[in-house]
Length: 182
Image (cartoon, rainbow, N blue to C red; front, side, top):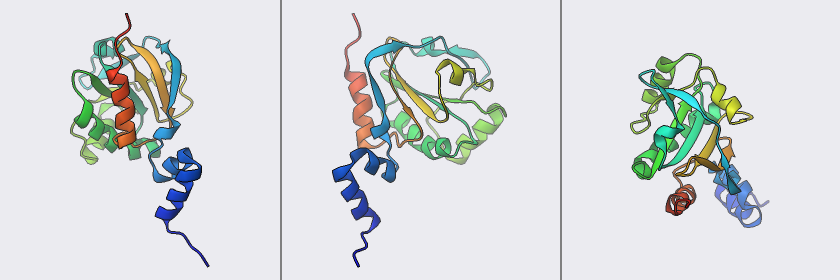
């Protein structure tokens, strides 16, 4: 009886159903939904680790990978290390990973989790009111919204993903390379 290994199964799936293979492999970037035209983003309010108010205007001029997460969300916990690696690799003057915790336990709980996973490159942002999820019409967690340099939503992914795979890096570098709107 033929029993394919997991690797062979993924290879067979990739040939027939590329998005399914990526999901099975844990990448999920194939589920990223890019918009035909950029969409406006409502004013979003959250707080930094010092409890100071902040919004997306603080990141204008950069491509923003806005991730909404919580410590109680298993897919959020699984993808957070890849977001930290993404920030280490691409974060800087052109791109910023803005991971906003919606934990009601506040900064201490989210900070402890980031320390637990060894996150060294992500800054802590918070919205314990979860208002950001309603403003973005997020049906669940995690949700990641990519925002262009002008502050417009260019796509989103609902669910967890590995954000530092070659495919994810190429996707984000494409958004960084796009010229600014006139």
